[in-house]
Length: 400
Image (cartoon, rainbow, N blue to C red; front, top):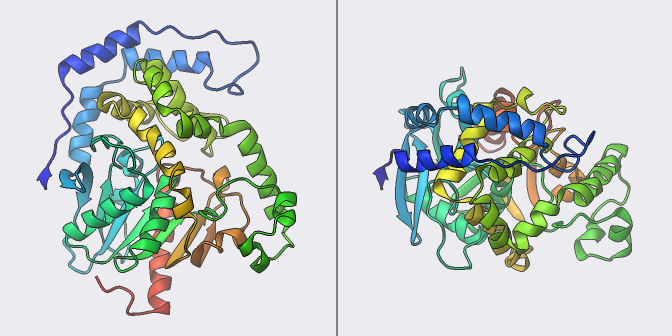
């Protein structure tokens, strides 16, 4: 392993500025807003800020000072990760796992709150860039999906001396946490994740479909659902109909889409920004939750590393592994966090409990799909609370 510093060449920065200056925006119909995707009006505003006010050198310096970066070869992959080790020998090793379209940057607010908050808990924090994301290497051969990523992250934690550790994951991080809990329970001891009925319920079934199809695990589930759970199903069906286009194309033809997004910074920005707006608790105003600098730095990480195609390829690779992922039940003690604007978390709790050993279920009043960015104080507080709860149930659980 070795320390690492982000250092984008002046040539790559000049190339980006030139491409931004030659942006050609698409037409926009009147009165459409975000209904058809990122509107040209907002994209034009963001591009102009990118061109005239945003400073990658300033952001690069901040990234290098705010985070402690390292790279290491594991499973024939060069893995980038952030590692903030606590001086407290009894600190809890905590693996933070991001998803798409994110990076380790999602944790820039959460890490200092876990490190320096007025809390009894202390953590050794490890936040990797997933293989194919950011400053980690792109898998060169097919077949590197969620199962292989989970194995690589487990190897990383053990190589760092953390034989036992806990995991926080969202988006892909949720599924990776599930694999860690089912395939590496000797190392992964506790999980804190967002509300997902994965992997057994991996498609948005209608209530009628569920009741008419005698799925083996359905017999164990209560048929009666609360009003809130039924509304959650309606929300999920809406999500399937109006928001899952990205998932289908990334899961089938990531290479084709990647040609466009890897060429056009405006196209890349439109593709990523739309998800941050749609999946967050921003009430239609994306900058009520994320600054332009946060959005553009996230986009720049994808741009300068050329990882948008390899990041989307994870959807294709993991689609090939669903049969394997469908097996098992995560016995590792798990906390579930449900944020109101995270539409992926709208499925009934009973379904979630078919996959996870749920010891703590918290419904928040605000926040969306990116809680480490949107509600870092609430998230950090509940992570601490869950570890206190686990300790009260089993004082010997913390054997790190």
